[in-house]
Every structure is written in structure tokens, then in C-alpha cells.
Image 1: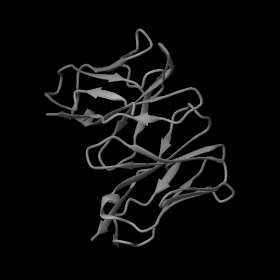
Image 2: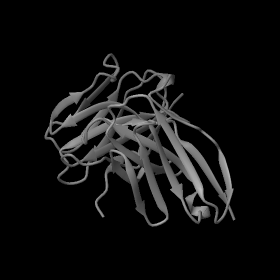
Image 3: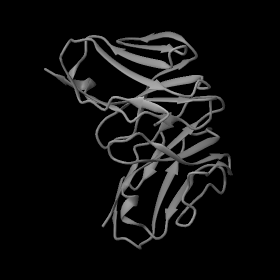
Image 4: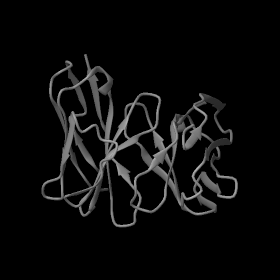
Length: 111
Length: 112
């Protein structure tokens, strides 16, 4: 079993929908949680970076961390076709340490 | 906006040949990482540098892979000899002290 599990999708939604992306993990020592967006044949782009439990909002994106359930989420409001990409969750024990990634969820937003 | 630079962007080689990838991190970032991403999977760490020193290379296949960061700035990852199973995206990332990681565009390697 992998340390970080993520549904590979694809997840297909209409433009304007609210999207929910999720990851579960097994190592309770993880402290820092990130979401990256990766377009086809490109490098991952950092979207959200949170420490410990709680919510963080940035524009149309909201990241949630529930350490008690070992579960993190990314919500995208008013989804756009340009949001179509693979979303990778990542986490680490300490800032500056290696990241452990989920396998990524492919999202398709249809006009 | 500062970015991580990588070259080449694409590389096609035959098995048993040698290949090398180059990475220039964001200026001032002391920590540099090389990850490998197989199609449809998340990136996995190969090696981590702090300045010119290797911090973690436990997942680097040392019989064929080598990495260096001689002056603590840019870095080179080498594979010799390449095998079919090495076909993947090779990603470089960098971070400042206690900061998150920023990735370059990657080098897509195809081994024939």
C-alpha cells in the first residue's frame, strides 16, 4: 500500500462546477501538505501550501487538512477549462525534506 | 519571476547509451532535488542536495545513476548505461531554507 493514495480519475465536470479532489495518507508524522497542478508534459506548479490541520483559501482554491483522519482536500470553485490538468497532492515531515506524492488525479473541465 | 531551468527538455536515446540532464535552481536556493516521474504516477525522489553535499540518495540506482552539484549551484544527473525502464520525466526542484519546492519543466527521456 502506498503512503499517499489519490484517485487517478479522470474526473470530468462542466464549466462552473465545484471540484473536490482528495488524498489519504498513512504516515501521521506528515506536517506540511501541498497541492501541485501539472499540465501535460510540464513540471508541477505549486498551488497551495499548508502546515498542519485547517483550511487555507487562495482565490478559487481552498485546501483543507484533517490530520485526525489523515485526509486532505482541494476545492476548486467556478471551475474553468483552463483548470484541466493533473492535480498532485504532496506532503513532507519537515519543510525542506523530500516530498511524498500521490499518484495524481486527472481533471477535465468541459465548456 | 524566478524559475528552475532544465535542459534538454526532451531526450531520445538507445539503451546502453549515456545521457545527462542539467538543472539550474532558483537563485539563492540551497536545496536541490532530482525526482523521477513515470507516466501516470507521482514524482519520486532520486537525490537531494544541500549546497554541494548529498543529503539523501537512498533511492538513486547507484550502479547506473550519478548526480553532482560541484559548486552548490547547478546540478547534473547522469545515467550510464540507459535502460528501457528509465523512460520517464526527470524533474528538478529547488527550495530555500524551510521553504516548499518549486519544480522545473522537466526532461522527458525516451529509451529505445
